[in-house]
Amino acid sequence: MEVQMFSSSLGAMGSLLGKLGSLLVSPGDQLPDTLKPQKEKLQILKQDLEEMNTMLGNLSRVQAPNTMGKLWMNELRDLSYDIEDYIDKTISPSNTGEKNQEIPFEIEEFVTLVKHARDRYSRYDLGRWASSPAMPMVADDQRSAAKQLRTLSVSMMQPPSLSSCLATMLSKG
Image (cartoon, rainbow, N blue to C red; front, side, top):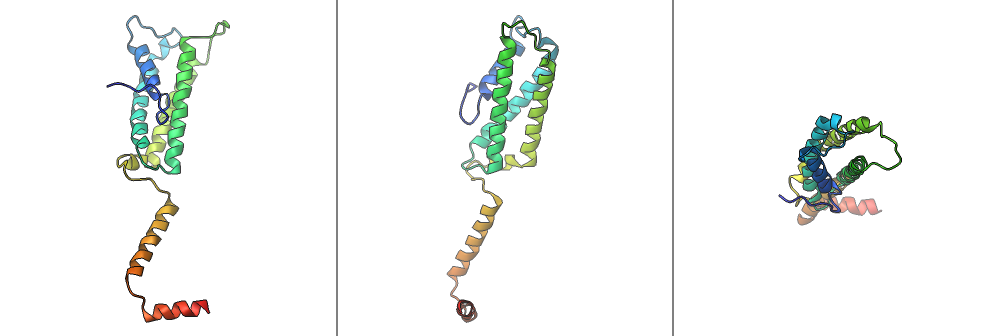
């Protein structure tokens, strides 16, 4: 299975998963010294991101995602760019001679942020929409308007009663 590197709907997720995969399973253990103590957390992060990538891909196929779906997708794409930037910075540190002492904290923070994104996906029931991509996501007010429109169209199929005609005439004064 070929992983797409970048796309407007998936962000840097494909590239990020490729980088994490090559770092974690590469011969000669190419993991930078600063990340070696965090290898288990990186493996957990990679597994969680693979799951998020599937969710993001499924949701990106929805015809018209609602606002919550769009916000979730944007947030996850931004997170994938942040994690990729972090990995790039860690693999190729700057030549300033400074060591990044916050590396373990940042990895733990990324793991936590990904878990929060998964929780929100479930809480907002976004998987329901992703399982039926041909079904557009609509907001509650649009659902209510559609219900009123259906009620109106059904009532228009029936001939008006004398009482409804009188009520309409009286209301217009």
